[in-house]
Amino acid sequence: MKLLKQFFFLGLTLVLMSSCAKIFYSPDANSLATKQKIIAIVPPSVSIAASKKITAEAMIEQQKTESVNFQKEIYSWLLKRKMQGKMIQEIQELETTNAKLKKAGYPETPLTTEELCEVLGVDGIMTSTFGLSKPMSEGAAIAIAVLFGAGAATNEVHASLSISDCSAKKLIWNYDHKFSGGVGSNPARLVDGLMRNASKRMPYIIQ
Image 1 (cartoon, helix red, strand yellow):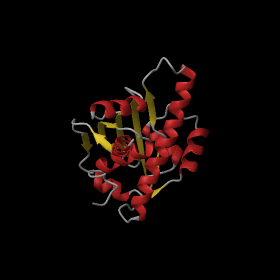
Image 2 (cartoon, rainbow, N blue to C red; image 1 turned 90 degrees about the vertical axis):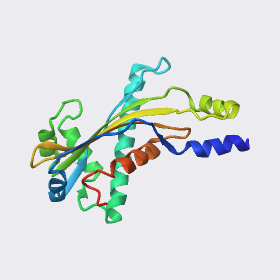
Image 3 (cartoon, helix red, strand yellow; image 1 turned 180 degrees about the vertical axis):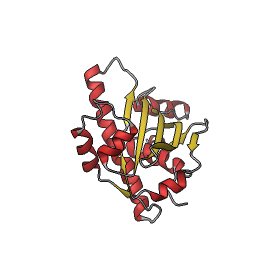
Image 4 (cartoon, rainbow, N blue to C red; image 1 turned 45 degrees about the vertical axis):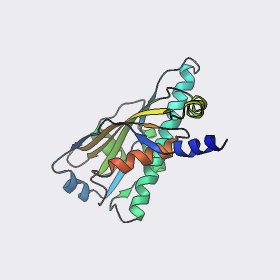
């Protein structure tokens, strides 16, 4: 039992995979980002690996739920940095962002970056995609650790974050990375690990 508890808490730590992140940074990203007064976080596009145990309808609902969860966690993470004085831009409240997008028929009706800017009435937008897969259950991961003394990832995530400037009407920054989470992984821990690494080159964060 003691070993089980130790593994559980160790598993809460996000484990980055060995592959390096791909980063696009426009030469004028910093100057454009500095001029932005208010930004919006668009609900992430989430895809989850198909499972025989989950119906197509249930999978769609799960993806919508995870989109809401990831959006909230990104918002909370950036808001915390703003409170710490590491960010000067205001962040549009999620209620406002989502209400405006719903009124415009998004995401059922696809919108270009320029159209998203107009609908949301902001200076910059952050979009993101999350591809999730669960190669084994958490129960199986714990069992393997207890029997063989080795950890196993319960979540593999391919995440991409992008920042676009509304005045210049273009992408100014993108961070693309694959990583994995251990036992107990949830959107909060996954986003925290992702944002901590991405923020090292994110034009919104003051280093």
